[in-house]
Length: 160
Image (tube, rainbow, N blue to C red; front, top):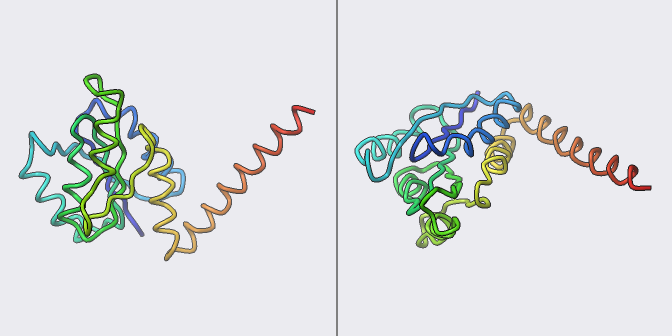
């Protein structure tokens, strides 16, 4: 069974990151949640990044606000795909600081970046990555997307 690590820089990021946790659990994907601060717990960050692949993770979702170094640092240390969630924090510059910190990574250290506070899409993307080699998860993704299509078509009918 595949497992996704969902980490965030502080507990204040949890309301945003909960969307990723919920969507992954909805696809029956095991989730391990932790707080790993790039600036306050650098030793923990290094340990997490270097050993994530040995702990059974397939993907790591990392959310952070402000300087938002967490996703990029994990990506620099881990061979796993890392999905970065820029979080609009209370002291942010409208969230642009975290978006650009995660988006503008140097060559060779990719971070798949979703929209500001876009943890739901991060969860879906992680599930799609896992689904590329797990047909059970893939079938759930297909059903989920079919459900989205049905909702849109029903909404369109309501307009007529």
